Length: 365
Image (cartoon, helix red, strand yellow):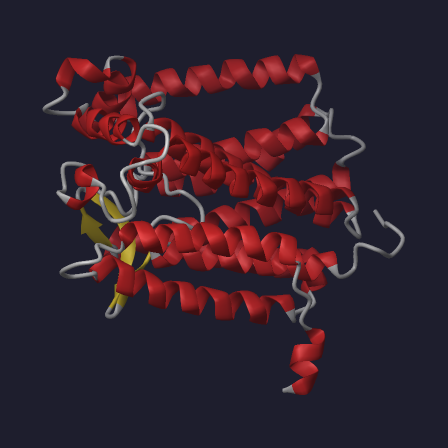
């Protein structure tokens, strides 16, 4: 046991902001009266996630650079996503969870981490010749496989995050302007094809309600409308802890998951929202700074990929809560209710913290 604790390496600049954001989520879920279903279950998930984090900090994750290891992990997550389409639990028209008795597992959350690992491995070996469009296409295939399996659930928000991770990591890797223009045109074409032939009516309605949210406030635009009311009613200093009428009286649907930022701002106000985003920004800055001094290009790209993941989640979640982004069901990292994403996020921080241990040695390719 002593040897285990000796191997642990905790980056407190990662741990402290993340745990404060998680505690902010718990406080927002706590009704302070009556049943506290989400608060109690999230507390258990957070405890399990923290244990996973501390275990991860004691592991030497350099074995992830091995191609055979990553390919095995990639195949495992692809099989899990394929199985999900057959035996997964259907909730509100989305087949995204395995029902495992006490809890439900959502494979799309660890799948995002697997995409980052695969791209980090690929780009770390080919970063010098990345301007060759062949490497952009091959890296896109890895992401496309996961993207399609998540999209078919259909989990539109998760698919968008995976696409953003690939696009962001391609940009950072050094793509040429000519190829960038090609990727943008290709993405536009894919979106048009999805709109015409793939997207189901409720998904189109969400995008339309984003453009004109007040045209159907009793239908597709209801959630966005109630969310903007919650954010605005918080004013400067908020209504007070546990006093959020929009969330506690259930005018705001899914306040513990999709709209937890709005529920938090309603109780803590504009100042509280800035503090929350400040904690998230502190975490992101630390991740990027660690990536700059990482042991190898693999760790650098991995850190960049994780930062892109968190930025996309935070930007879209906060944006849809304020009515400036479409409602896509994307969680706020470390804060929204749910075990799968919380475990994945804290595991990711544990990996990053462990990698920091080796960042002081001479850099390798």
